[in-house]
Image (cartoon, rainbow, N blue to C red):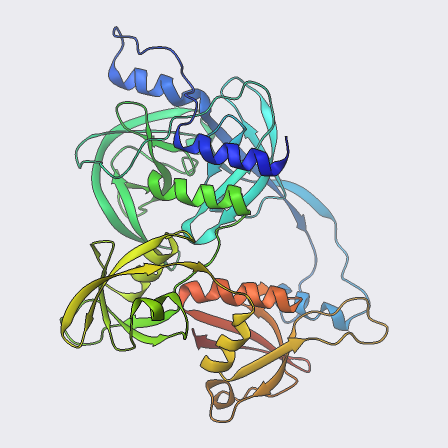
Length: 443
């Protein structure tokens, strides 16, 4: 079966996955036992291995060494060793062998293995990832694969039973129980904020990441993903409704496509006020067509109140391309709700965006004689009085990375800027001669 046909089938199966346990619940056993029995065979252990090259770091550090590699004839040598990097959990969610897990579980993996409850060890390939939501989709091939039933997280109630299954500390298929403690939680971890999490007191320990959170019926209602290090009995899960939409995007396109709204915004600064103020609207964008104007204050998205700009960015990332969101705005003292459609961000518009916002024009780096490869994009022009001119950028400067993503071609650069725009900030690594400098711009 071709990948295209398999993707279409997998997308349909997402809405009604084949149960891992097909028999009727046994009335002689507890509800928790029946719920676990329905899903346990579809829960997998995920282990990753990465290649580590041992070398003596240069005086500028290995990151900068990699960018300067083009200037040197020889690399520093070193043996590459394959070492086990992490253990986590995952969930087979369709009969074709697609596995949902956390991105951080497989982020550094050169080889990924999936262990099934029946003892089979399978090599996994990465279908696609969404680091912003900490989700990844893997694929394994084997006969008679079980699949877990995906439920809904839209009707969850605080206090209902929560069941977590995973691989904590390498202890395969461990089950813990508790209740749903809260919904729509905001969590800050590793310097980033995440929103709309399910909170539970079911024990979630290292290794549970990527495993399922179940309700009492054995339906998957969340993907376990975070631990609150400062306390005990506090764990978090990504709501399955959000995970399902993102998984469908990854299966269909290999990534979560950038949904383009065409508006920039920042926090409302008035004391005691909440919400987000629109600072700019791209011409001919979905936001412009919906009637959004600079200066409007956004107070809610799809009926959920918005506290700050970071929360709005996160929530907008969950709106798939082709759908619409209900945006509640205050325009000149009048509140209204408008349908904000989404479109895929046109990559060709990246240069126009940078020229308008930053006063920066770029082009491909010209290949030099005798060099097999060339990396980065070169600054072609700087507009007078622009933010780029203000920080001292000059024609001929080379952009080597955007938000730590190395860019080798103009297309790499466009994609990196599109991804950076999700967070509202682009940090450009600029090379001038043998000097590197990081410069941050708001997008």
